[in-house]
Length: 363
Image (cartoon, rainbow, N blue to C red; front, side, top):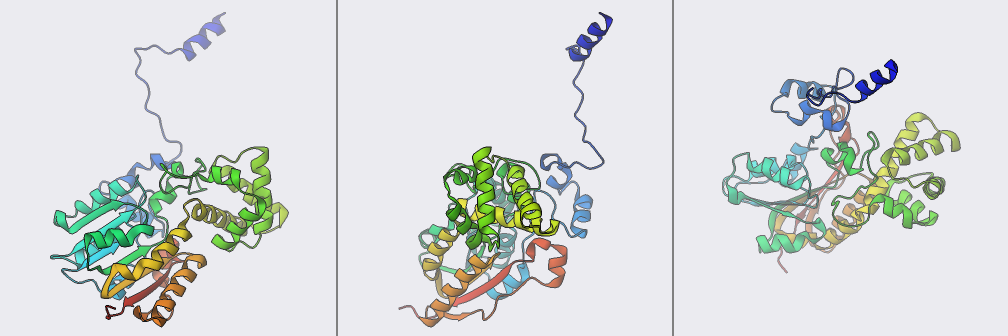
């Protein structure tokens, strides 16, 4: 009886006793939402600096890639109209805004309804004139119409960073990462379209295999498609870790690859599904067809891509534009991040930068 009373007391604490503050397990918080220091860099600059010195990206932040290389090819000048078609965290946009002052204007768009308001607030806090920044939530596939509405003569400089922002990668709730468990979503705009869960429920083996091969150059695309859809049929893969576990198992036990190769395969699968969920290559194709119309004669464009499918499209569009006289010059070869940037920011390793200059002719 006494034991029962003790159990009741332990399970039913006095309502007058204040609840204890939840404690983090271990020395450092591990969950994304607990990383309070990195989410408040202005208060914990020393801690953030340690993360950067270790060659890592602080959780919930983003390190823009090849900033100086982009500025070198775009050559933004005071008074010009600049466009950032993938605003993201605003790292590139901040540098463009600085370069086109005084008198310049930046047109920025992004499809992410969660991050865009934060980025706009961050950019406006830099102290530039309010009229120097125009922001709109939209997919860059329709960028040409918006740019010409805002600047009928077109833009002087335009850039696209086709990579995923670190804020999106790091937040498990978005479903882009397999390093923390979260819903298998992957939508840039969680308010529209089908999630990755929905996509897996509608695909056959041939279609999923094609997505893995085309969007991520996956060498075992057929085997992975069979394993993923087989597991999904038995017990729906609704979380990021459940999908990652299927990929690792196939690589380690089925095709007998190393753990590093298995991790790379997980990364490729997530990339391929993200691209398919958001129809990223379809959007890029639409933009590339109208890209030159966004630019004034002599206008410059720079595009950062992160895998072969994107780079092939950008390269082909620029070459075609050069042959038809739409572009006066294009990059002969892509520019890669410097060795020091790759060491300091591993997420820059796969980036390729290509640029083009609009022809001066107006016909």
